[in-house]
Image (tube, rainbow, N blue to C red; front, side, top):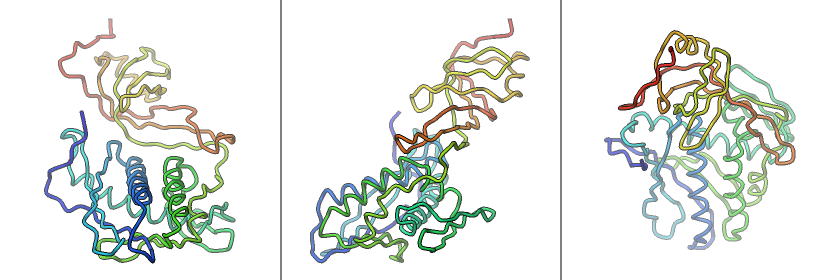
Length: 301
């Protein structure tokens, strides 16, 4: 099923991208890469909060002689599963996180923080030059551990750096209030992927929906086979309550859906400078939805 733009009555999120230039033209590749990678980054951030999060980007007409680009961000849905009221807060939050992420990258200048300290829900980050900023755990993890987001930022600022006509880059909100601004001299530092402080392993947990492909009918914590977004995935079933329900005779079939809490453990690959998936486990099954019009398998006999 393809993605469709939601037709609910809503107001899209609007941001402005401003390219600081002395001339009245802009390289098409610079514009295209900036738009694509900005959208990719927002989607990656939002996807970590909502499994089926997707966004479309509409470019409004440019002002004459200006390279201040008005951008509308609209929610996309899969069929009719979601509505704009569910997506819009995530779009706004993802923009806020994007801005915080870019400002943190700007302060760190591609170097390892000299000190980090957790203060409740925030992390105090001290850059190598002594500059200090407080960010959320999610923002800090983007800089340190999110390879797709960092790769998008690297491609975007690599292009901005190579375009000799662009002297600065800025993001503004709907009222044209500056949210982030960087100069030409800062592009190489922002594009640089920061050395990861977390070199060993990390765990991430999120709520997603999985399609059962290969169940394991044993009471122990065995590895089940699933499909997620059309791709195969193995995860160890660790929800003892769910396993007890199966043992007590709950019926299910391959193709049934499970809404679960999925914990992913990653280890750092020094040769690639990224974290790779080591294991996945299901710590909680929230909902079991039988597949419609499908013969069920009774595993009690």
